[in-house]
Image (cartoon, rainbow, N blue to C red; front, side):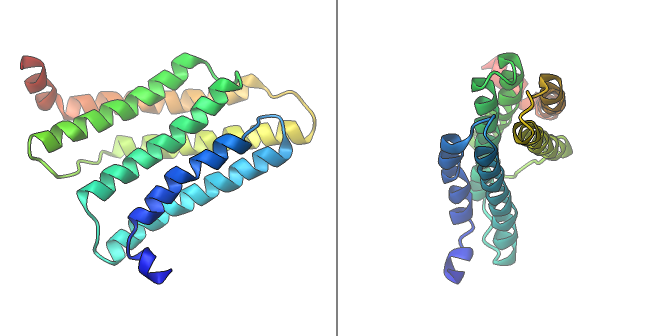
Length: 191
């Protein structure tokens, strides 16, 4: 086990693999399913913290691992938002705006790689976006859990307010990314 901790990418892949059981157990109106979903999300959050910690501790951080970590985070959030969409709890336009932010971010990173720039340019807006989206997901699941545990219909306004916070930070982060990488975008558009 200790040897595997020297390979933080194992933890990143574990986070992606845990999406499958999350999708299988999630049900917005069943208490047990919501507890299981929260437990799986907590495990995913722990792998997210640990993969970065072990990469730094054992000095094995690399560009591919950072990209995969970012993609794993995006896959987790997108999966949860799609589950909420499938249950009719959030509108499609909100999910699309959140998803587009990650697609823009990944596209810009791959453009950097294509130009030979392997430096990761992490923005504070991206960190805040990830934090707000994680808090929104947790808040939504706790609101769903409370409603299911007292056999009360979920207040969609609460769910959508949490989601709106995720959308607003996603839009802000997208604009920040595009502004920061405006030269790369201009070069791309000229070709």
